[in-house]
Image (cartoon, rainbow, N blue to C red; front, side, top):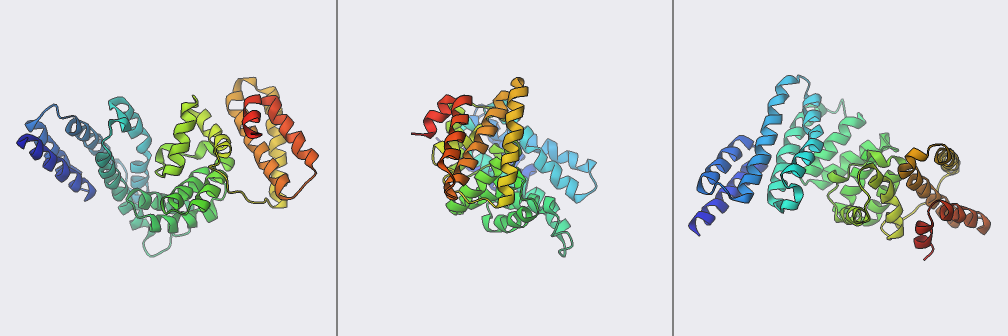
Length: 315
């Protein structure tokens, strides 16, 4: 019992140091905890994570520019996901560890980006605004994250990564209606640009898990997310398109229909992408009270390329 109490205290101390951006001390404390119980699963897990990140931090010496340093840190998240998969990943259930790691990583990157923001000269750089917004979200300052991500989105209206990050922050702030609109826009504009593992809100995580249960993974998962988001009522908030947007939508549908016919090797991505656009077109027809025959024509196209989705849609 005493050993467990001691280890619990050491683990908490290590996490506190991590959140204070002192990963070196966190590593040393976890090594002390390991001497008490060298098989303690959370200590082993946390020590592996901290050591992994310290090895990456050492590589910052290879960069001179502050933006490159901050960008390098954030770029390592996807590699960290792969590392977590190898050691048991997020299924390990050590959320306090993941929270502390997240705070350490994003606060470290944020310091570099804030140095660049300086007196405001770079406050119109959409890439920098996105990175700063991501960092503030990562440290849990959602109000500040919203501020920077909204600015980034004004410059990057068709960028899936920016729109999804803004949507995620809206969801975390309980701005559910705005979150649903923005997620839907993100998956329409650039589904492959959305980093699902960077999303933190329950709204999108639950949808992701349900779609994965259907066997959708990887790039295919990203294309099917808006389809099931619509079918499950998650992406229920919709807007009327401007005339120029309707024209682009119809042109996109025409292009995709030709690709579906000419590229049978890529149907796993093309079909859901086309269905998503059919959904948008049907919504537009309904919003503007167009000829019902146009809706029936579009529904028939969905029935032909995916009868199962058609059946779910008309229920």
